[in-house]
Length: 402
Image (cartoon, rainbow, N blue to C red; front, side, top):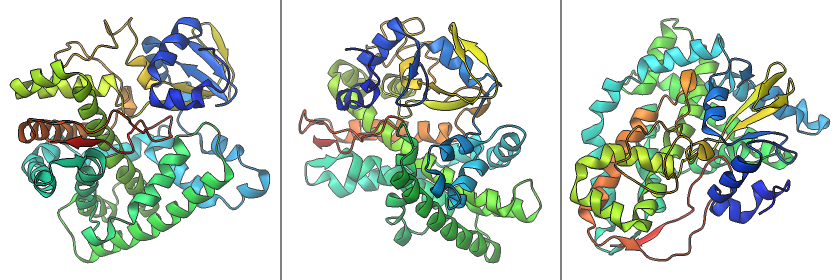
């Protein structure tokens, strides 16, 4: 396997990126990719350092827009506005202010209180497929569970949820490619416009009739002058909606696949469900839902002996860091009892994922319940198809027999 410029987009790399990550880490751990237009980091130490380096910025909307033809840029205001106001695309002090508001609502107590309801949702989804003896883990379970949870939190009624999938997929596609393509950007912008209009109406409804959900709390803070403008609130509701289901869908799908492919670990967890906490952490490490975090250099700097120039992209490969043998002994082995598992599946430092506690709770309940209720669970086929996305690692489907 050579380190040619097309390697990071080959279909076999999408299916299984880890052999390539290992090769890249050993041969060129700070690798310039012309195709992605940035530096690719694959060592754990470099990735962790980059994620907390204040010389590397998340505010990269101008750089993204700069990849589009000049004639397009003036018409991409809504997309650029979305990126510049999202906590995932902003730096302090704006990032600090926006994050503080959302973190003040998404407290550990709020998430823990949701456990019984999440268990009910899991049981209802499994009830719907139990009689057939088969299910598609993604379609029937891993997708509808987190989408239901985040929609309830944001006040999106059941009848409106189906229309969101395509719009969110457009935004996921924008973030999962190397270079930004005009068609991808146009679709993402149209989805931003539609989602912004929808959440504007949701905000108005909550002002007229307050609700005890996440959206109600955010709107209450908005009306009390708590740091966020209405436009910022709407933008970050879109970001929460996307992040609130994409990672969890992948955790459940990737996690069950890893267990089915490692029957000794599946049996160990089935025999001792109390291992689910360390099991979920290991599943996050082993096949990370988010494979990379992107930064842009605010000034010239050095990483691993390579000179990074101001304005260049730095791609911190979370999936590669989580398989670094310098940090994780025998990293390609799934071990649901692994200790000292300081993975970076949810990022690191001040940008650690705000929804991580909820994703963990959903993953713990979902996986343990499936194993308990489906004791004969097995793959329906060894042929697997992954989403063609280098940022978000998720199966298109996962047919299983019960």
